[in-house]
Image (cartoon, rainbow, N blue to C red; front, top):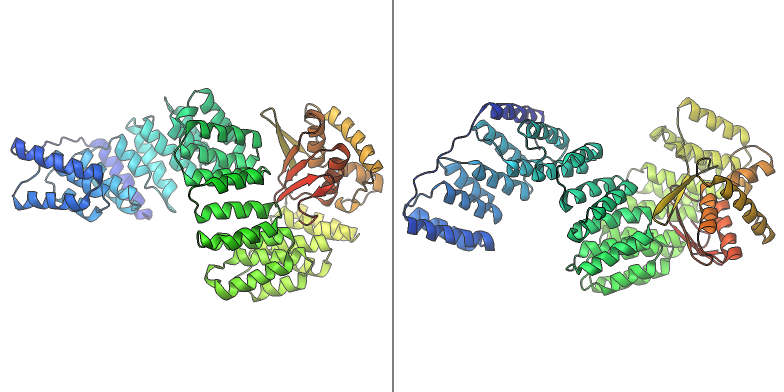
Length: 610
């Protein structure tokens, strides 16, 4: 990684290159027969990456006193670089009396492809100072070396050079630019480069889709794939494109699109690509179709620890702790578990409510695999204790564990205090969190919930006043569902949906039906000191209720309703969904920030434990 001094040198070298011109003449060729023999041998070694053969070929040239011409010396650099023998490649380059852009680029590319970005950038600077102007291959190789803390600054400098030398719109350079911008989370600049490209291919589409997916902008990623599809490039998509797209569909929990993409993958008859199969497992589990996830998993001819982790996480997300334990027991027959595996298992026990089994597993891990433990594993156990109401024991573990507690761990315990209405521990944990992250609205809201559940309204108002003082804004709750390839989003007390009047009328009708079936609203979910009738009206405005109502209105009777939510589902909405599923005979799948709820005939797979 280049420091500030290196950045200044890079900028200076780029300026120098703009004023220089390259005029490189080849050395006189040796005898034609000898040249062609050596050239054929080196070419064969490059194609086969046969370093053991290539070194003797080079040694014979040296022993015979044969001085290769510029072209053949460059081929030697390429051979050594392709085989990973970068020291040998650099020795050949340094020994060349004259070099051209291909020679320099071969060495820069070698450094870049072998994850030695600092050397690639240093050599690029040397090349510019030598007066050799780069081509599109040089710039694309250099761009992939702009990594680390200073990476984005290096990308911008090389980008500026590409603009001045008219390479910005070249396919290779443009694709490398948007890829590096996307990886550095500067997706707006990546999109600007993408939109400017005169011609786009699957590589450039994949890079920008990946950038959006990495930032959680899944709708934008899906929109770009639609554009790619409309331009007729879907059959050119490769495994990387589909893997990236499936990750976006996992975020959206879009089962219909996921099935279509899976079908397209099968029609293309792509060769086995483990990362793609792993993405299918993850996508189906996040869409509530564990049966499909398991089918993909069972049919894989080869599985890695990532494959096992994906299916374990899927079962854990659905609260199927016993299935997690059963799978985990069979896993060592095929692969060794890693740190993520243990996290999936502990998380599965936590979501499934198997408290004692989870604690026993943690004790076993501490005894036998303590080197794999990190702060996240302790977080799972603290979550497990918190969910079961053992708040003091969770607090003791935080104080004794060999890691500094994170905001996530304190947040998990604060959430447990809200569920069990433990005011003393809740206030202690809230003070810790407000010191660590005073800007996080969630902590204020949960503390307000604790006070509201206990009827301590003065304290609720005090917390709200503190939020206003610190100018903290609560993340608004929203739910969404996909119908007929359209994403419908709902916010609390929805005012902008085109069918809001119909939705409001329908939810009142539903409310009458479910109250007749025994539904009792949980008024403790309302954080306002108002009368009960007003609380009921406020609860009916929750975004997940509106989404479920829209699903009942817009889909044929008997079909499942699938809803996603950005925050944790409240108790009242969970109860609402259970009674609706029973009264209307609908399966409701609801994925919130924490886990997956599959609700059928009035019962949820979470066992009312989330």
